[in-house]
Length: 115
Length: 112
View (cartoon, each protein chain N blue to C red):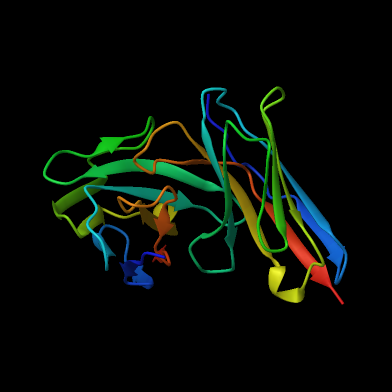
């Protein structure tokens, strides 16, 4: 299968600061990547679609100015949580679907804790 | 509409028994479905998939059943093992880009 890698796997930041999470497709190119958020004991909620070279598409209720997405290359998408608050603490996961696959592959996730 | 996970039901199964995990999906237009397994602190891993033109698909120790009439998916795991302990999600999509909506999830706990 294909490999999607996220970095960092865990991050702790102070309230009011910004945090950047990277999502890389290691062995394929991804024109589209997806960002999910998962609270404890809950399902994955799609936040946004990251499009290489263009603006991200956000799901209803997701603040685009709070969750900045940049997809500057075919192998890298970044999610920046701006002015983080404790309620932003969550597990963030990215995914991408390689061209020759039908399924999406997921990164290992990033545990964000805002203190 | 979209499936929204608000809680995580638990299925407790004895080692060696068969497990059946159910999922109700929301979008009648969804044409591709995947079961994912998620272990604690990790991203989802692919288990098995099925297209809407099928009603059953078998893999190694796993079988997925699709009932489009009632928008229901099930995952059957044969001879459940301790390593099967995880959260299981069904995911649905209508597009070819990999954009999936996830069901509520089921925590499977395998007891010896």
